Length: 347
Length: 269
Image (cartoon, rainbow over all chains, first blue to last red; front, top):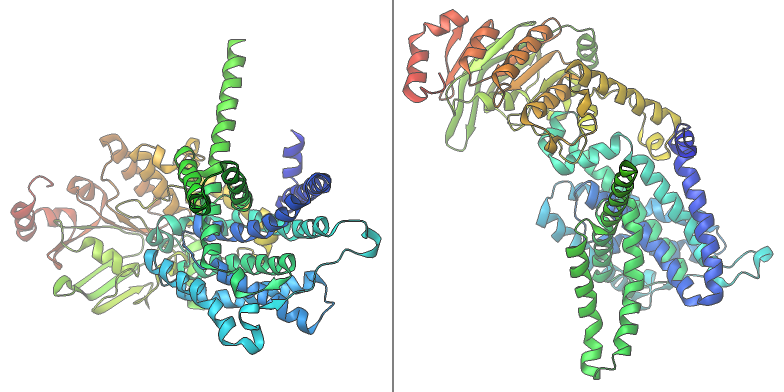
């Protein structure tokens, strides 16, 4: 028995929990080292933590359960505004409690949206969730006495404890983001291994066969939506802490579309894919911008080019890796294992 | 708690009894079933035959809650189950296979079979989310049960394959395993022999005979030879009406039946 197998035999919670802790420590150290080189990258990495949480939830809903949502940006907004409103009243509340409150509020909102979504299919579901993404920010503007309209609500910055006062703010923020991200991935990985994960995928494949074999289709779809919404709420809360703001402008339709792009480019339905996709979504615009500036083009071309390049990168990536980055990695690993076996056979 | 009672009766391995009384189904202006009455007595193997479009699958669809009848009653073990929801079949101990198999292609064979298992005292959402030992034990037990079912049908070697990569005959066996793992009291088979080789058909007949002790079986089938050799009782549908009921010999000598078949589908007979 290898070490990994020995750990796995001790149960799902221990296996995934250990992986989660290892992930936090490893990435935490990388962040610490990176900060002396480039503090801005560290700040961007804290964006990756919340984008990855939202993408993980969306990949369960869309990739595993087959429900397309174009409205997850709006669900993130619910989480962000909950965080801002809670902190307005209880200024010094522990972030963990604030995040749990944001998860609960967003989950309750997701029950309503999910119940409607369970009755809709394909383009109708896409249209309804699109309406949510477009319409919800308007609520903040309409009820500006509560939500402060376009300006939004400010969120106090997360300060590191006194004992760690040497830790730069951006490093602390990224560290704090790692914990909810790791917890999210551990819990989702646990769930997808069980009956719930199988039911999610069975419904995506064939609803009639699912119902005939005892799966409560609508109920399971609502569960998937609420789970996914809870992730979006947590992501929104973390986003509010990161940007110190909850404002309608932070949750445009493009945010929802970027989340969708992240899970597709990362590998639809896979949790590691949600991480790869989030890294691409956060870092690619910057690299494209740098490349664009280096080409010294006339300004009318230069201003429009990044978006076009972003599109080209996506199209090329999907042609090269139809199953996303995670699918590409799996193929690479399988290919290398095959070569090693062939080499061993020759020797 | 009549549902719980019938579920435990099914676990004890007692076959269930199905009865359909004056069942009518309309799709718009088309009458798919017209006052059909028939029964599947406990422990019997009953065949439902008839030319294409006779309403055989529609009858199954009503019994399994996929289609609402315009009139009539469906009773199971003496209890009226009109308007049942498809997901409740599993708890009642009724399993049904589909003509198109309806296997989940993205899931492995063993996962397909695990989903078919009786849903009862599974650990809740929270234990699954937290990956608690309780959830692990449940999953392991379920996997073992599914593997045993695959072994019983002699297809355990395909446990980790995906259905789409397997020959049609094996896929058919997987769909049977998925229907049988819940230990049903009533098994509804929609064209179980279609696409099977002569040898596989023989295996199917032997399998169904061996199941007779534990469950009642109703099968919709095109192949008359299989139905004649397997079923004790046969119901014949034509254009949504029951035109004959009886033993294989009675059906073979029934003029209405031969007319219905000779009139439309010589090749199948």
